[in-house]
Amino acid sequence: MTAVSAEQDLGPDFSSRLLASSETLSYDPIKEIDWEAPLPEEHYGLNPEWSTLYGTPLWDELTEQQRVTLTRHEVCSIMSTGIWFEMILQQMILRDQYVQDPAKSEFQFALTEIADECRHSIMFARICERMGVPAYFPSRTVVELARFFKSTATGEVAYGAGLVAEEVLDVMQRDWMRGENVLDIVRTSSKIHVVEESRHMSFAREEIREHMQSIGKVKRRFSALAIAVVAYVIVSSLVSPKVYKSVGLDPKRAVAAVNANEHRKSMMRNASAGLMEFLSEAGLLTRPAIALYRRVHMI
Image (cartoon, rainbow, N blue to C red):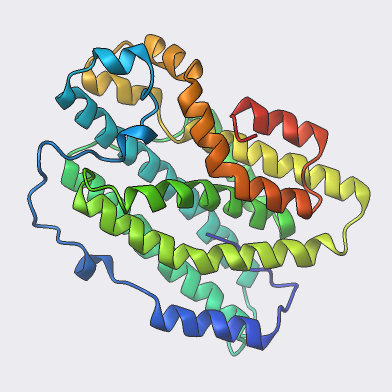
């Protein structure tokens, strides 16, 4: 999930390698996932350890079936947020590549990324439909502010936004794809997403490095804060408070339990470790940015 810059040319060799990787390491979710397979009642939507309530007294109060139901709604909330953000990134890619030379490998890889993201969004949508879980989206305020962001974000901010979303989800999905007690459709979709997004993340990191070489101190501080704001919004929006109603919980009580959940905080810090290391190396971990990352326990 990265935006491709029309102003920079990373070189035909780099883009050509990405295109070659797309040809050999791409999947068709319609064929790869067994959409007709039954969904065992005892299988979770994600590893219990990744549930927002895992490790809390409230989790201990839930029956096993309530835990299964909760994790299925949680994973679909994460997927719905993924669809929302992938649509933002697809629009940025199209905006950046508008009337660019279609013969260039950069242009062709940009469209390849869009094709990947379209398949991923459809895959996530069908999984939630298959589980009978409604769509969960960020608040209306966040949705509307994102309209402005997708129309203005460029360079390291656009790439950084995509990277923070993908890095955190990548760590989660690497666990889900190995979870023996996780639904097969989630395990298979996680494998597909991890494999195909790995080249998107590599591209984003390279773009960020290139852009950071030519920006001044003021722009660097602004970009660091902007990326941190995006990270804060994404992480805060992954699991909607509405999911707790699915198992008969009071959302306010559940959210309070999540906010006090030290296990959850530890999992988020671990999931963000690689991202924070890269942002630090790139010069994008300023004090204001770190303060925001701490608020969502990414540091």
